[in-house]
Length: 308
Image (cartoon, rainbow, N blue to C red; front, side):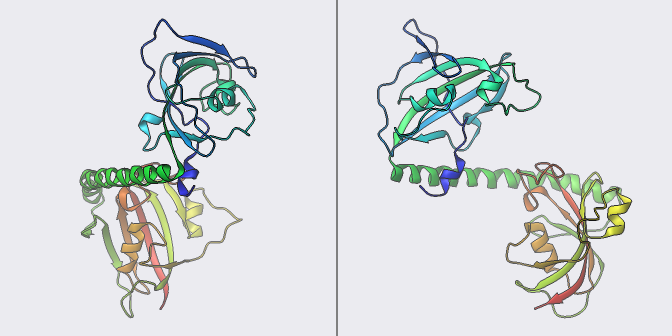
């Protein structure tokens, strides 16, 4: 297995459950006493080394979806290995899955999530699970399937990014007008204002620029800075960290695209403001707690030095 192994999630499970039928069978796990019902029983047990694909939905008692593989680019899967021993009731259910199984059950959140239930769910809240195993693949087939799925997801993400660039350009234009900023726009969608021209040779890919910066969300909230006075003014000063210019090898993908492109426009001594739409920033993933998904970013930057 290659890089798709990193996608394994304990609860990345099953397709939608079919309509209840009269031939359903109910069992109880030895561990945790989870009572689970077969809406449909499969017949094909995957052999060791093969991969069983499944879809999963986890819902609250009120049928609010907590997690669903149907919203993910890749289904849940597990590699068959009959030497693995079940540690809990959830393991028992998953390790016994066969192609064609469609299962539903309810249990306390502390059992479903092994005590790591997401907020605001409480450990004794009843959680519903719908699980369905639908295909068996060899390792080679699994790798091909993964690559094709990721290619499709990348294409979808690129289309979403195009739409966001158009939508966010309107928001950025309004921001510029409100703040009386006259910015230039690159073909990629980056907005920039050169506040002070630098000197020396033009910056080329691989050049190391030493950059002081302050990064803000569009609403003005500071999320990071190399200037101690800015950190103090925003009650974010940390005595344990150094406040100094950040060395960046520009134009080679070391930083977010908006920085890579924006810094290439600067020289030693330059000061500028970069307004970066989310596809050129941290995109749909965001960055930690301070930068939500699809955030437009505003950076004040100053190039203190440049080395070829």
